[in-house]
Image 1: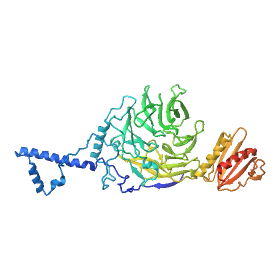
Image 2: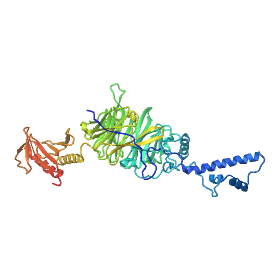
Image 3: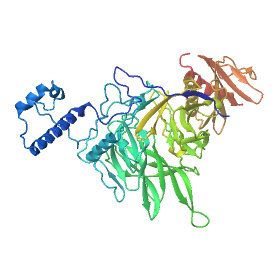
Image 4: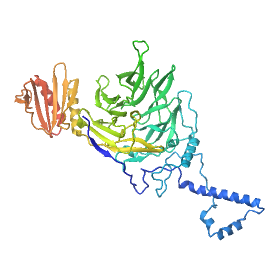
Length: 573
C-alpha cells in the first residue's frame, strides 16, 4: 500500500541574519571591493603613459608637476576625486596567490543576489586556481596527491550550519569557488561526521572544502578516476574507489587516505569491481559492493554482485550477501547491528553475519539509505517519480504503511537513480539534507524537515529493554513483532531448547486481554493468566504500560522472565 504524501516543500528566500547579507539564494562573486582601488590606479597609469606618447609625438614636453597641479585646479577637483596618485605606495595584490580561506567578499548592497559569475569572473577564478594548484598531468598509474607543498589548506571552521538542524531557508548556497570553474562538474558530495569538512569529486580528482563550501581545493587524483568518497566515523579518513586495469580487464579497488592526502593505503585488489565503501561505526571495517566473476558451467564464468566486509587492519574479507544487483550502496546502522543495501529498486536490511535479508523499503532509489542519528529511521529517494524528487522516510521496522512518510521536493528537476544525491540526517534527527546543483556553477545544500515518527521514543525503549532481558535470561533466539496499530503494542519472543516465552507490551492498557482467564500463581505474587491453547503466564502494569509474559505450559518460566522484566520496564514503580 503506497504511503500518502506528508507534506510538500517549497522554495522560500533566505532572510538575512544578524544584519549581515543573506548567505542563501546568493552567488558569491569572484571580485569585490578589495580590488577596485588598484583597477583605478591601473587605468590612470595607462592614461598617463598615453599622454606621454602623444606629447613626444607632437614635439612638446610632458607636463610638469606644477602644470599638473594647475590642470587639477582648473578641472574643479576631478583629479582629487579620482585620487590616481596616492602619496604613500600601496601594495598591489599578488595575482598568483589564491585566497583559500573562504568566498570573495559580497557587495554591501546585495546586488549579486541570484546572479551567476560573469565569464570574466570565472576566468579570473580559474586563473587563480591554476596559479595556486598548477595543472599537473594525471599519473600514469595509481593515485597521487594533488596538493603542492606551497599550498596550505584553510583552517577548519565550526560545523556547517546545514548539519546542525533547522535553517532559516529551504536551501543555502555552497561557494565551492575554485571547483565551480572546472568543466567536469561536481558530484559524490559527502560531509564529514563532524560537519567541518566535505569531500566531492570533480572529474578524476577528489576535492575537499570546509563544511560550508569555503576553502575548496583538490587533494587526490588518478589516471582512471576516483569515486564514492566516504568519511570515517572520526572524520580523519576517507575511503574511496579507484578505477584500474588489472590483467587487461577493467577493475576498481577500495583505498583509504587522510584529507591532506597522507596515509594512502590500498585495501582491496584483484580483478574485481569494488565500489561504494561505507565505514562500520567503530571504524575498524569497511563494507562495499563487489562485482566479480564466479565459475560457470561453461568454464568462462559469469559476473555476480556481492556485499563484502573487510577488516582494515588485517585485510580479511567476509561475504555478507550475494546476488544483490548493481548500485547496492551498503550502509551500517549507527549501532552496527543492521546493514542496508539496494537490490534493484528495493532497500534490503540484514543483521550480519547470519541474519536473513528482509525488505525495508520498496521503490527506493539513489545512493543507498541514510540512517538517523539514533538508528530508528532510514531515509532514501523514491524511485517511481523520475520527473521530480521524492524522499521517503521509514520508521523501523518499516513493515506497515504507517511506518512510511513521503515528502515531495519541489524546485528540482528529474534525476537518474544512479546519480541521486547522498542523503544525510541533521544532528537533531529532524531534517535530512543533500547537495544538488540546479545549473552550472550553482551549488546548494537543501534541507528538508521530516515528520515526527509514528512510534514514540518510549516504544523503542521498551522494545530494547525486553530484548535485552530475554537475551540475558539465556534466550538466544529473540525476535520482535509489531502491531499494525503502530503506537500500541509489540511482541518479543525468546526461544531455548526447553521452552519459548512471549513478552507482550502495550501502551494505554490496564488489564489482560479478554481471551485470558485468571488462575492461581504458586510461583509469585504476580497475577497469573491462561488461555485454551495451553499458554500460561503473568501480567503487570505501570506508568501507562501493560506487560504480560507467556510460556507454553511452563508457568514458572514465564514468572521468572516477568520477575526480571517488570523492574526493568517500570523502574520507578
